[in-house]
Length: 207
Image 1 (cartoon, rainbow, N blue to C red):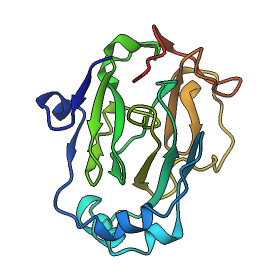
Image 2: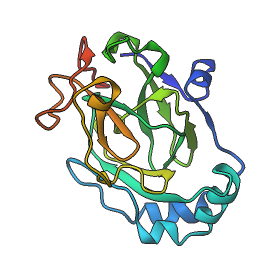
Image 3: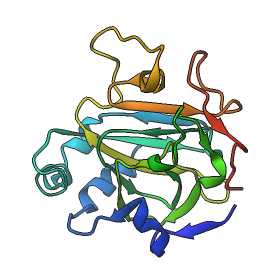
Image 4: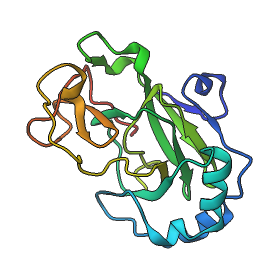
């Protein structure tokens, strides 16, 4: 599939580059995190949250909302699923990485989504982007099969287990898999049994 630059005009519909925060302290710690052969996501990592970048992100980017910084590292080249939150997510790249993005406005009434609408954006190492709440996203992809290290900044509590029992049998609730996390899986994506498999079309690859 075509891979666009995050600097291209097309990216403006999905997010923006964050350039008013000093990411050097965060990147220094992020580069120490593991790069497994699979994909590992940790929602909150103490070493990342003890950096000066954490304070700036809290005060400047998230307007003093409580936040968490974790990472999504590993090797991945497939779409597999798309998710969204009810707020922006900031991704900080210690390595080059590719984001596969869609728009929530393109979701069908039944929350299915055609993967032909997905666009791929290359985000260079050292770059931070805000992915808007109106965007669909999932695990980053590496470049040319290489591993990646990406810090994930979200409001505190996001992606953790539910705090109360939920009825996931109707409407948008079918998509919920964790706190502030709505997921639409692809039938070939290998998500857990019972996941909402609403992605139609090809399970896209960046290779």
